[in-house]
Image (tube, rainbow over all chains, first blue to last red; front, side, top):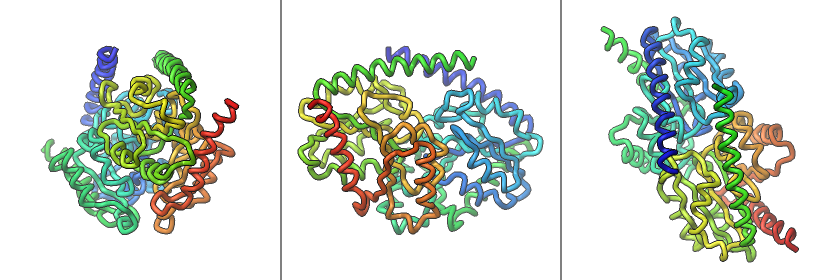
Length: 228
Length: 228
C-alpha cells in the first residue's frame, strides 16, 4: 500500500513539474524573474514585502501574486503600494490546498500583467511543509523564518530550509524578549542547508531590509546578465 | 477535472473517517480521552504541554503522541516529564505528510500504553491548514495561536479555528512588544467560531496555564460523567 501511495505522490509531482516548466517558459518569454516566497503562518512575509518593495527597487518593476487559502487581506495591504497584485485563493476550486502548485499559478497567469513586470514575487500559503514540494516555475525560492518560532525549526522542517537559496530571519526586534538563541538557529539553518545565504532583519524596525532589497535586485540582474 | 479532484478528496476523507471511528472505538474501550492539539509551527504547543502536564493533573494519567514530519525533538523534551510519549513521524512511509491522519495514528496504537492512560494528547504537525481536515478518533480538538502570528489568522485559516472547541492564545508576555491588537484577535476568533472558548496564556511566565489545566481536567471528567 505504501508503494502505491509513493507512486501516486511521484506521479503528482511529475505532472506538477511539467506544468511548472510551461510556466517558466511563459515567464522567460516576458523576461520576468519569479521568486517563490514561503514561510510558516505569521512569520511576516507581507510586512517584509511592504518594507522591501514599498519604495522603487532601482528600475525593477515588481508585482506580487498573493496565495491564500481564502480572503484577500494581504493582497489588499500590498495593493496600497500601487504595484500590480493578483490574488490566488486555493479555496476556490482547488479544495483548500495548503500550498500553491504549478497548475494554480498557471490558472492565474492571465490575470498577471506580465508585460509590465520585471519581477514577480509569489507569496505562498503559510506552511513549512508542502509549499517546498511543489515547483511553480520560479527562478528562486526564499523563505522567512520568524525568530519567535524557535531555533529548532530547521531540524523539524528540513525540506523547506533546504529548498531555499535565501533564509530571511525576521522579527529580530523581539530577540531580547525571547528564549531563543539566534546563533543556534543560524547553526541549525546551516546544518540542513550548508552555505545558504541568510539575512537577519526586522520588518518592524527596518533593520536588514536593505540587504533583502539588494538580494532581490541581484536576483533580477541575474536574468539580465544571462540574456546579455 | 475539478469535479474529479473533489471526488478524490471526498473519498480520502471518507476513508479517513472510517479509520478514525475505529481508533475512537479503541480509545473508548480503554477509557482514554483523546485531544487533538494543533497550531502553526512554533506557536508553543510543546512548551505549553511542559507547563500544563509537567505536574500531575489531579489523578489523570496523561500521555502524549508526538506528530512531526521528522525527528524527535519535542518527544525528547516531553520524555523528561516522565510521562509516556510516543513519536510518530509522517516522513517514514507516509510521504512526509503535513498533518496526522487516522491511519497514521492507527499505525502507532500498539506503541501507546493505552491501559496506563486516562488521557492522550496528540501534538499534531505544525500547520494551520490540513490537520483540521483529518479526524484521528479524538474526543476534542484544540489549537494554540501565538500572538506573534498577528490578529488576522482566524480570517485566513478559518477552517482550523472553526474545527476547535478551545483556542489557546499563547505568548501573552510578548504583547507589549508587538503591533498586535489582542481584542481584535479575540474578535476575529469569535467571528469565525462564535462562542468558542478561549484561554489567554503565556507558556513562558505560566500566566493562564491553570485555566488550561482546568480545561484539560474537565475534558477528562466529561468521559467519566458520560460513563457514570
